[in-house]
Image 1: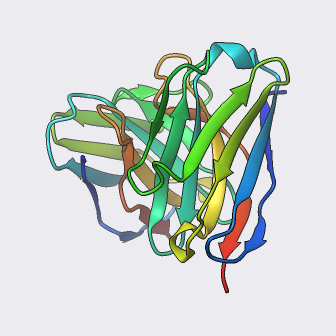
Image 2: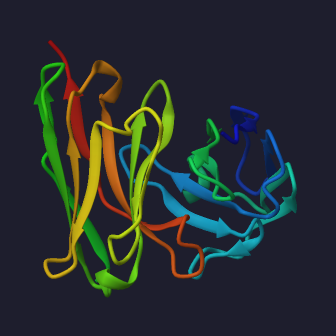
Length: 106
Length: 120
């Protein structure tokens, strides 16, 4: 199984900051990686697929990069609505797996 | 409006069974693969099962294979998860999720989730 390790597990930041979250895969997953945002009590929201393609309707301040085993999610200028937990997910092979999450807090 | 609505969660004892359902609306259900994903506080998000758009192909995470069965009724726009021989480790919020248009194994629409508690 492909293991995904996210870092940091918690990130403290302020409005307007640029933040980066890292996701490392235990083996190459090419660019078959997605990112999700989840707020407390809600289902995850689809943000990015193919490592860097932003889903329609997602603000342009969200971007993704990487390939192989190392990936990043960047938020260019934090807005109040962005404080949430972020997960990466690989779909290169079954079983599909998620990272452990990064909680972005004020 | 595109939406998924799960039902069927509840409290059961170890060894018992439960059947979850997911009603789809707002998209052509028969054209998309569908998934079940679960979430626990301790283990985060865990993909559980996938069924292809036509229902012919199913995949499962090892921990549920042989106990859980995913199925779909395209005439009723409904996805199901039959869960047998439940254990404490199956306690979680269960989400149904739609495979995205471009990437069938990423999840672009999620339901609100249904809670399953396995406890004696």
